[in-house]
Amino acid sequence: MSLAAIIGNARIKATLTGYLRNERVPTSLIFSGSDPLHQLQFAMNFAKALCCRQENRLDACDRCHNCLAIDRGLYPDVQVLAPDGQFYRKAQLDELIASAHHRPLQGDRRVFILREAQRLNESSANAFLKTLEEPLASNLFILLTQNLNLILPTICSRCQILKFMPLSNHEVKLELERRGVDPEKARLMAFFNTENMEELAEDDWKEMEDKRRSMLCILERLMRQSEVEDILLDLYDRSRVRDKFIAYFREMVNLISVLLRDIMVLMIDPAAGGILVNPDFKEKLMELAALTRIENIFFLIRKMEYLLRDIQRNLNARVLILEFINSYSRQEGAAHG
Ligand SMILES: [Zn+2]
Image 1: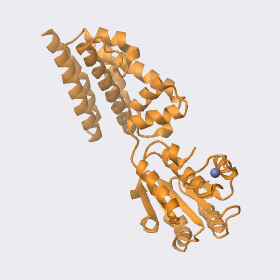
Image 2 (image 1 turned 90 degrees about the horizontal axis):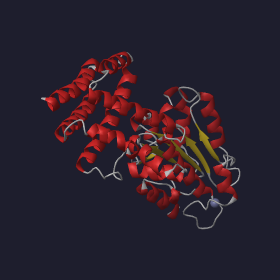
Image 3 (image 1 turned 45 degrees about the vertical axis):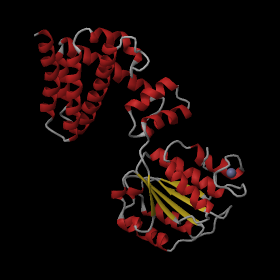
């Protein structure tokens, strides 16, 4: 692929192309924000554009020997490093510094890409700082991180910082399609998970399918007020491991909100299959729509939004669970009364 083919962050693309056009490439860059895989795409393809053999290049040609070798990880002047353990080890950085002192082996550029740069700690980064401070013009260091605040300030001050935007749902969908994911699956996957594309792979599709189905089942039990105690007990059980519970509950509320929105769409227009988020559940959702009234669904959607906000605020798990269960039983009561 080339820089031009990457989906999203057009402004960053323009900045990088500007460096190439003006032949003024900084010696150290930090890519911050966005997802790690997306940043790596940018770093690798910028490295390719720099090392490409084609004349007057403003992007990677994606065909020459250098471009192909970089893609395969076989080009000696482009290295990708990741922390060995919780932090980068001193030995790793010593090796990097040693090769940074030599001229490039093949072209006129050497590019070092450091993934998870927030895992450079003070004790291991000291010697590396000196390398950043007295750079060789032929070297380029690209440090990738999701959180700029976690990077050592001494490193930050020596680098030019490029801030990435998270991809929109639509961009995630396009990116998944580019990777060969079926468009309908890509649409659903993008809808439910935009935080970290590294987590989005065809393999996860089955897991997400299971989640959607189990949430539909929970919603049905809540709306019919059957076996609600089981849901309650299951949630109490999960709430013992706080972090996992918060993540699970957030996902649950999200998925149920989307199902409720689909129910509302069907209440307004039963023929509206095409604009549902979960068109494959249409039949079951129609059944559920018949159980209640649109005002109640409105109420529940709002309730789910408040719950999501409260999860973010890390309120008491048991209170959240009771609120969640009660909003449905109250609805049921209202519908009958
Ligand atoms: Zn090339």
